[in-house]
Length: 294
Image (tube, rainbow, N blue to C red; front, side, top):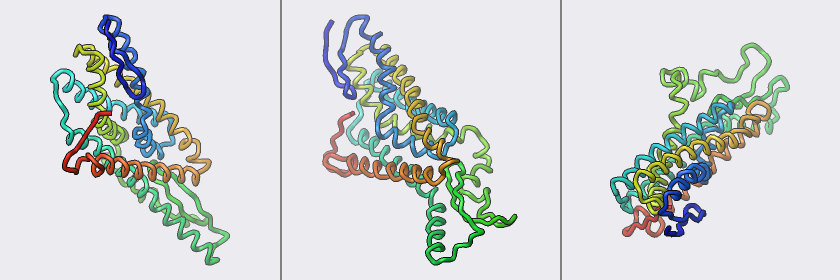
């Protein structure tokens, strides 16, 4: 038995050339996949998606969709590296990391712009109160419509309601043919998982190849790693969705603040990744790009 100590996400792994080694690492792969689901960029991205989801069951399915997308990319890119010996050039590797940053920025923008109506209404309401124009017969409500939160003021009359449900951004999409398909609900987390899988697949495959040189065993490791990622992301998504689900009806303003925070964190985190992988020393847009799979 020969041993080579290799780092893998802070865990020391040992290469074993005996028959027991690959089997052990196949089992370990599942649990490392679950740990991989807790990476910061994964958590930030999924928080923006489940922020408007009051159902824990649907939140878990969103996590599964993310994990499936991630696993498909890891399996495809990893198999190309392990079986075909494909080498990822630095610019391509940095481009994949850069894409994750762009995606996080977009998720943040989408989350924050979904709050735009609520922010504007809240500011207008405060201005009315400051001017002493408040009406005791009027009161404000915060309503959540899936990924959209609306604050409005209305009275008690039959025609005083401050907005129409079919005028919210997602409501207009939901009444379309696309919104009527169940696939639509899972498309966004699936696509986000695909992009995240691109960024991490090379590092995972190279680590596996160094530990398990046999292509069949190594591909099996990637598969179990993917299953672990799916399970781990379902658990992580449930944990993230819980405060959103508990506050969506009872504490709508606090729920709104949670969602704004998730959008801001995603946006800032994306900016950091874009700078680090695109414009810092050795970045994608420099003369001498340097990429180390991690």
